[in-house]
Image (cartoon, rainbow over all chains, first blue to last red; front, side):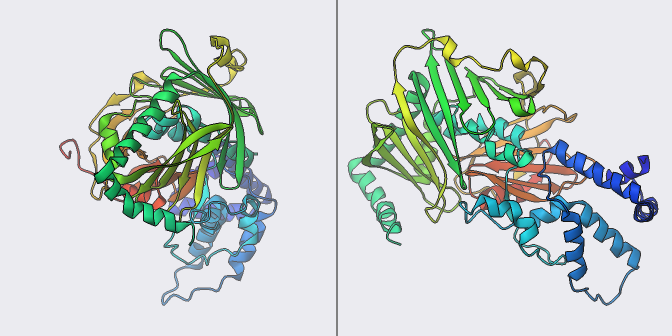
Length: 175
Length: 326
């Protein structure tokens, strides 16, 4: 179990990590732990909890992706490791998958929530030259509150802009 | 298209008008009037904060006592209860749902009056015009328009109460003149009987055992040369302050540098990387864009009420030059 948490923290070297990944694949209970750890981590960081079966759908989707035929194919195990870690850091993929809202600030919020499942994920191989912007989920609140006091706009509007820091939209996502 | 025309005409006409009839001067006067009014008036009202598709209604009470002490209480009326209490230079956010208290206290720089330096910055980076009168929450107000001179900043549209100058509505617009965020009173009473009780927290007593995050106490904040510089500073932005500070739950000191164009501010936070390498990410909260990336062994978070391109340019041109790299 402690090895699994070490794996999660990125503390294992390549060889150890591979061993643990093999264990994870064989032991269903262990895989459950791995999943739970991530859910706990996400909750602690206030990251949005993904819908039921997201991992399954993401894995299916990754399977459907065309295989990139590189001139020299490295060992297959390594590829698996990447795929697994990609599936594990679901929030990262969701981040890239979400549509850019910078240019469309009034895009319906509801669509946003289901975006990771409903919209087409970009090919896993793409370099994502343009980073999509996602709504703040509250993780940056301590920075936001620290910033606010220095902003000249605060001197015009008083405490009002602090509503950004305590905005309900973030709280709803944390549920 | 039809909506864009008046803006273009205004943008072209304003410098000429400024030179001939001092309209810019008038705009600056209004900005000062707004800042003064929001600090010195007693008022109570309900305002709506709108961003993306969300709207949130809050109640606000602002009270200045005989000695000039400033007290403000803001409580949300929709969704989970949240409260922001300001006592002079201290801001406390109570988040009952997560049983969290965020405390931010700082020296005299908090809620600074608009200093002449800043106003020069505003005039250099925006075309300010005082236009028509409008009505907000039953009060007549004057529209003050700030059209950015380039794409590095957003446009602003204020409506300030005619007599006092209190801002009744503030809108932030992107380069396509689309609304990013707005604050507007729907009900407002200026003056009347006030006392300290009206600005007291509903949660101060209940929150004793909540998680308290002293995000930044003045003790932990020291002016410093962090050694970080910008190789490509966005046009019109100047360094406002540079310091190191502590954050709850973080062992290492965080460098904090603030850049401003007189109205908008962008904060840079630099800290040693945690064990797990953070991913590059871009997020937003109303008109505030937040960008995180890594620079060698550091995690950099840049945020501010400026376009994503400006925030990212600052983040991407950060360089560590050491102590002598000023």
